[in-house]
Image (cartoon, rainbow, N blue to C red; front, side, top):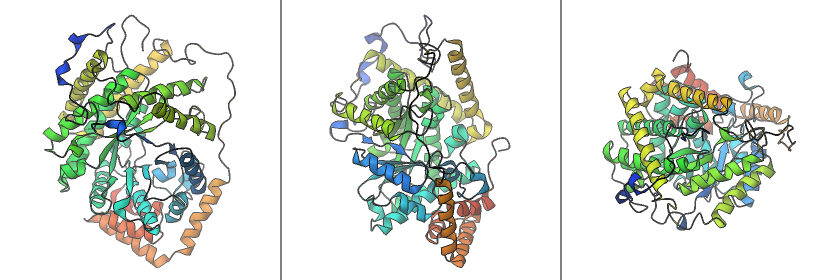
Length: 525
C-alpha cells in the first residue's frame, strides 16, 4: 500500500478510511453454492470438501522428483503438482543442443514414456489427484500420464486432475510457447474433446491468471485477462462442437494470491461472479458445475524477496489465508527460499505446515465465505468486478483474446502496470519490508537446495537408451502419422498417443508439429 495520504491498491482502487452500509448492497448477497457463486461454488464449502493441499514440485530427474513427491505425501499433502523443466515446456528433448544447462533446473525433465514411468513409480494414480503445469506440449504430458495409468491397470474414467493447457497466457506473460496461437488453440481444443471421451473426470484446462500477475499485472488485469482467455477457450470449444454445459464443467482456473489481503479475497469472489454470468449469458450454460468457477491458488512468487528471506514465511501465510478466505479449491504455498533457489526440504515442509495450520488451527474450514458481508470486502468485490468487466469489453472490441494478443494490447497493458509498480518501489512510495525499508546491513546465510550436477548427464543417457531400444520403423511411422494429422484434420491426440506408445520422444513429436505449424516469434508473430 502506498505511504501517501491517499491509500490505494495496486489496481488503483482508492481505499477509504472507513466503509459503511452505504458502500454496499447487502441484498445481493446470495448463499454459497447458488448463482452467481460469489460466496463459493459449494453450499458447505470446506466443511464438506476441504481444499486440496497441492505443493508444486519438480527438479532434476524423474527419480529425484518422485522422491520429493513421496516426501510430501508422507507428510500430509493431498494431491500432486508437477513442475516441468524449460526444455520439456518448450518441446525439446534433454539432449537437444538448445537444452544444455537447463535440464532439470526449474522442474523435472520428461522426454519419453520411460521418464514418466519413473516419475510416477509407486504412486497409485487411481487414488491421487494430479495437476501438471504444462502448456504448449500439455497434450503429450497428459497422454504419458494416461499411458502410465494403463500400465497400473487404472482406467481413464478413474483419473482425476488438471492439466494447465492454457497457451494464451504464454503469449501474454510467460513466453513458453512453441507454435503460433491458432494451431496451438487447435491442440488445446483437441485435448478438450479427447478427455470428454476418454478421461471424463479430468479438468481439461486450468486458465491461468497466476503468470499474468507474476508478469506485473494488477489484480484487475489478472482478473480481466484471465476471464477473457476463458471466453476464447469456451468459444473454441463450442466451435469444436462441445457443449458449454459439458466443457464448462471441466474448466478450472489458477489465480495468484498476492500481497493485499483484502483485495485478493475480493478478487476471488468477483471472479466467480463474473464467470457465472459469462457462461450463462454468453454461452447459454445451465449446468451449475459449468457456471461455478473453481480455482487453484498459488502464493505470489514475485512477492518473495531475496533480502531477509525468512520474512517470506509471513508473506506466504497471509497470501494463503486470502486464498482460503476467498474459497480456493486447491492451494500451493511457496517455500521461503524460492527467491534464491529451488526450495529445500525444510522450506517445503514449512510451506506445507502453513496450509495444515490454516486448516486445523485457524478456523479456516469452519464457515463458508467468512468475510462475506463485510463492507470493505463487498465494496472491493463490486469495484473489481466493474473494472475487470470494462477491461474485458476492451478485449472484446479488439476481436477477442487471440486477436488482442496478436495486436499486443494485453502485453502493453501489463508492461505499463509493471513499470508503474517498479517505479513506486524504487521511489519508496510502495514499501517492501527488507528491500526498501527496515533493511539489514548484512544478510544472514541460509541453506539452499543444490542440484546434482550429474543429473543432466543421466537424463541424456536415458533418452539415448530409449531411442536405441525402440523399434525404429514403428517410431518413424508414428511420427509420419502425427505430421499427416497436423496437415489435415482429426484429433491430434490420437496419433500423438500412438507415437508416445512407440517410444517417440516429446521433442521428436513437437518437431513433427513444427514442420507443419511453424513456430511463433513474438517480434514477427
